[in-house]
Image (cartoon, rainbow, N blue to C red):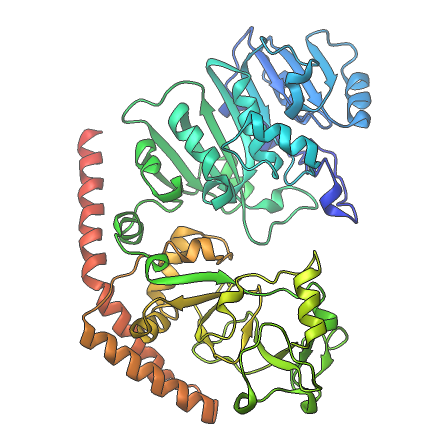
Length: 521
């Protein structure tokens, strides 16, 4: 557990992806959650250097411990370290393939504690095997499989404690695992804390969490204690921002995501919404060339990575007046088209990028396994571009019908043109940002999360007002490139008015539910 492994140069082929911490306070807290009793059998299926084993021994309980690791070097070190302790059994094996004979399938444990590898490489044959074992899980990611496999080894009423990426609590790809846990087990607590506790590891996009879970069906009123901690001291001393949620209420939420900051008017609206962005607009990811350094060009005043990207030759630009939609590419010298990339600029982003749309380049995008010629039905259509990654506020800008958009942007294409102005204003609003961060607290704004945004459509005359104001504003931006903060505030306030009553009603429900919980206690 105190071993630091440097990430390899080829990260995706690393089967270990192991990160450890030797902090005694953190280990002691994890053992406290695990609450082992004399005579318990304990499993550590990613033992590393044995920090959790040391914590179990420090508890003073008489325990039978089985330690497993994939690394031969780790196993050799563990056998030397615990050579004199007959209560510790050490095995080298792939825990995810434990049904292959190295592990007695009939042997289960009262306590399991594990800090599983995150993002460990699985070869394709192994993935196919794991998909048969766990058809509802995402088999490309190791940590979720470790959780599922660990729980198959947990005795009835036994307890397991895991350290996981915080994204497990809301990531779309892990919804199958969340559903499995919520339906079949009792979740005691979730503690969220910074990833910097682990030496050499800092997930800029997320934190980590500690999950305590018992192998018993949840009772109807099973509550999950969720705590947000800013540092290790808050975590180990029981401080931080706390709230409780009913486990069955999480099971009713879309994709079974946990409300990390408790139930609010925003979460109520998200859960109760009948209409969502995905119902009124198509949300899709744009093109990837496979080699942007070769196929993209930058405007002369665009200084982003000037060593990688060449400046555009104006003689090679296809101007809007001469443009005709073409999915096969151009065969003359003028072959570069405007490209919208990610970045936080509302309503109209300055034109900074161009993509090679020659016939040869397009053929490469179609044939190159690294490229993504995806969602081509949306190329050269007027839409709204929302950055795939952003951390400060919601920003959406127009995709012109003579432009393309790349994979750093989610293209939002209203199914009814009458909704364009309203959706453009909504996707630039404070309300949108609050709702999106409730759906996914990280900086990831992928199409899957945008589609879940609740939509409240105003009356038709109000839609006309949004369309007129947004259209006129875009025309002014095209001619002057001067943002008008007053217009943007006006649009933001108009969106707030549309959502005000619904959020107010949801807030009343939240307060009533909280009052009922207090009375029951």
